[in-house]
Length: 352
Image 1 (cartoon, rainbow, N blue to C red):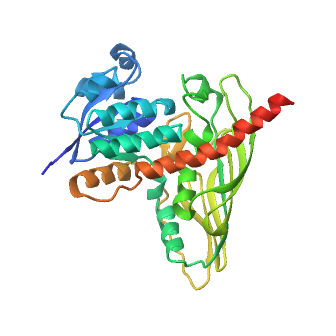
Image 2 (cartoon, helix red, strand yellow):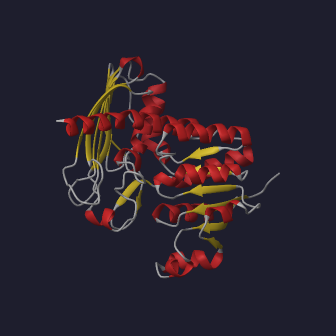
């Protein structure tokens, strides 16, 4: 029986470093190689922490080199969104499992091809949707599954974050349509995943998109207001923005139901802010989830440890995959449906 899972990591940006640190924290995992497009000398100049990684592990500037390494079992894809499909395909075709940061791809057809190819190669596509592991979200999932609130009427999610000018200015892909895709892919796919995981698919979608803080680095909206239906005719809304002043404000979800009302809030859906359910005593969440802190901005919940732990347990113990390629593909499909309305809006505006 295999004792350790051997990893490669593609991309040594903020999220790649998170993967590296997490892999190194498990005795059942071993980091073998790192891939980054920057040269060794350029990476040397970035930070002492990255230099430590470069001195300790194999370093490549091309994904083909790490795919050819036969001792590696899994490769984490932490590159810009628009590169996920091409890189993940190379990993699968090299007979390795792949862990893909959100979003799985920027195209649902590409996601389908990845899944079909992985099935043929008998390999697993793991998707990073770490918010599923947040205590408040797992509690809400259990609450819904046990029908504690009776018939659910409507769901309302708000995601209001800050992404300042430097976030776009200091990146060669943030804000670019081809490599980034938009805030529903880059910032808020986690929360679309939570809505899907809890309440099912989206239908009858209506949307408005706005670019309130226009700048030359941003090729799409910074804000959007959505309404839609879930399964069982549950009504839903999602309001999102990356133009919030100075720092992230809130990521919240409100559930209005026959026998109760719940609001999970905080910056990262990590706090139970309101719970009033018939004949039910709510739990006390003593510790809020930490976030992925990148210095100049903050990301989503810092639950990557649970993601890697699940991957290890799937391969070594046969556990179920927490977020499969099929589920990752579904999130891409939902965002694609929403953004098809963005395309229609642009065509209409250009025709006027």
